Structure formats: structure tokens, C-alpha cells
Image (spheres, one colour):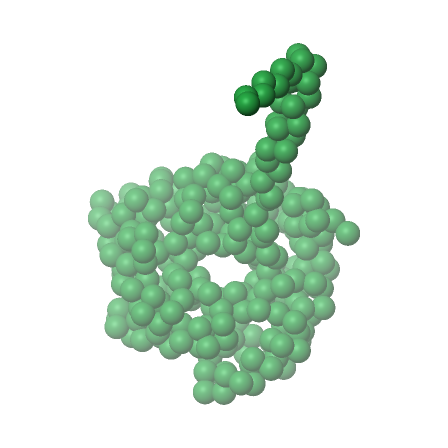
Length: 298
């Protein structure tokens, strides 16, 4: 015997509403970024005194950052005693993000020597469960720049990236203002091997070069592995002219929105480059700016 069920219009409407409500997707969660600090925020790129460097590491952890980035020369003293630095990081409740290095194809230092240094630093970073070699370049002094500037730099960076990859870490190219001018960063993005080279965008240097950091973040897309939040002002005595984060012309909301559009989930790193103010207040201010910008203010 076949039974026929007849639904009223009201019943159908209620059923449809129930189905729609049950199938409604939750808004996608925003990717979780992590906040780190470059050790030079506390006044120096390379700390020749070990106790001074250890004090910086301790303070980075005390301020509340999750990660530390630092010049590889600060780490070199621990290359033959990695357990000692692992204990330092553990005590400070920090993760090593990576080691910052530099070089270029027109440097006086032979390329093989640079590659050997990169290999040593990469092995140590990997041993510390870190992620990156953050590599800065430079441009030739000749103006206008030689026509082969970006092709030579791209070939050089691919070599750096090959060594990093062989040792289990990523290579991120860190821009300065001079190599960010005239489309240099975009050229390197186009010419380098995506499997070997990613990018660490420095917003302060980008602004100095007249670039829009939010637009550059969109261009770099998934190749952006780390971003230095740094401000810029055209007023000031130095060629870098970085006021404390939040006090210059960096459009932080626009940059955060650009990162969200690309589902960025990498490190947000504070890098203040001034010796005119005490490092800890700069670090505390920077972390507060980060937390507010990403809706994590306490």
C-alpha cells in the first residue's frame, strides 16, 4: 500500500529553513599569525658581548614575543654547542625563527665562501628547529643599475636557496630600500625559483623606496614567508628614518587586510633600527601594535 504525504506550504517553508540553517557554513577562521622580534630592535645587529646578547634574548621572551630572529653572527658562537643555545631559547620560552645573513654576487667575498657560511648557519637553525635563513642582498653602486643586475642577483639567490633547502630550512630574501626601487623586488620574485627562494618583506625599506607594502604583499603572495613590520618617515637624520612602529606613514590596517586576503599565516616580526631609544620600550610598543592590528589586544 502506497502512502502519500502532503506537506503544507508552511511545513515546506519550515523544512527549507531547517535545511539551510543546518548546512550554513561557519565563517572561515582567520589564519593565525605569530609574533616575533628581531634582536637588533634592542640596539645592535651583532652583539659582540655574549652576555649582552643573552640579555636581549631574555627580554624578547619577557615582553611576550613567541619567536626570535637574529644576525647569524650572534649564533655562530653556539655552532659547536647547540645544546647551550637550545637551553637559552627554552628558558626564554622562544622559538628561533631564523638567522639573518647577507651577501651579493658583486661582493668581494667569494661565492663558495658565502655558500659555506650559509650551510653552517642553516644546519644550526635546523638543529634549533628554526625555519629560515633570512638573506639580505645589495645592489651595485653604479647608476643607473646595470641591465643584468636582477638576473645576476636571482642566480645568486637561487644558489643560496639551494644550499638552504639541502640543509632543511627555507631561504627568504629580505629587501632593503635600494633593491626595492625600480621594480627590483618584483623582478626577483619573477626570476627566482619558487622552490628555492621566498621573501621576507621589510615594510620600512619598501616605504623608503616609495612602494606600497600592502600591494607588495599581494604580489609576493604565497612566497611571503615572513614580514618585518617597520615604519618610515621622510623626516629624520638617518637614511633609514624609522620612527617607532605606529608613528610613521605605514598603513597598518591596509597591510593587515592584504595579508588576510592571501591567508598569510607566517611570522610578523618587529625590527626597529634605531639606537636612539631603549630597546625594551620599543619592543613592548611593537607587540602592542601587533596585538591591536590583528584583533588580539589584551
